[in-house]
Image (cartoon, rainbow, N blue to C red):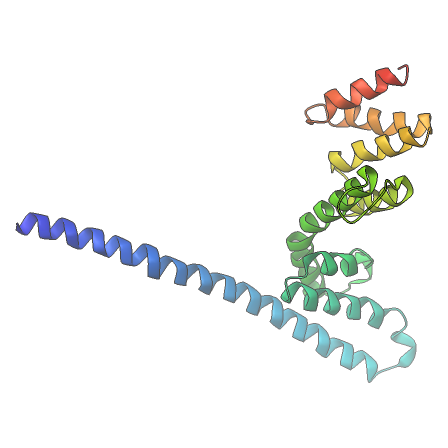
Amino acid sequence: MPFVNIIIGVIIGLAVMYFLVIPHMRATLASNANKNLKSQVEELQSKIKDLQGGDPTQVSGVQEVYDALIGAYDDYQKNKKADAADKLVKINADRLTSDVAKSCYDKIKKATYATATKKYFEEGRDAYNGTGSYSKKDYDKSIKLLEKSLSFDENNTDAIYFLGRCYQQKSDVEKAKSYYNKIVDNYPDSKRVSEAKRRLRELGE
């Protein structure tokens, strides 16, 4: 019986760790990461105030960049990742002069771009197929959405392939070929390769 009691005690201890201790540790780590990002944004806001109190000729273009970065952070905090990415992609990272700003930019980018490229690809595919929120096929709209998807991830082969499909449907053969060939030449291991080759054969290549 004592041995059985020991085993039971170990099992209970492991259960407590799994259900209580580990989730608490994860929450603490996530909280610390958010606090770190928040402190960086607060430091940026302080720098903007300093700029506004200085020579007005030095503010031109700077505040817009930092306002966009802080706006991206606000959206990210609200879990609006695609909206955050939309703001971030408009920022010229070369205009970020401080290490704090660059670090903040990189963290938000890493956390949001994958969501944004997926969102705009799926919307572009829906516009191509005339499904989802699109009652009919709209190739021009699809092209805009798919190009937007690529602005967040230039290696999104799904978006590249559907751009080829759009131009094929619009009878722009050369543009269609260019997108299909891009997949074949640059992404030989992509799941879209066989489809791209088949479309190229359809177009006589």
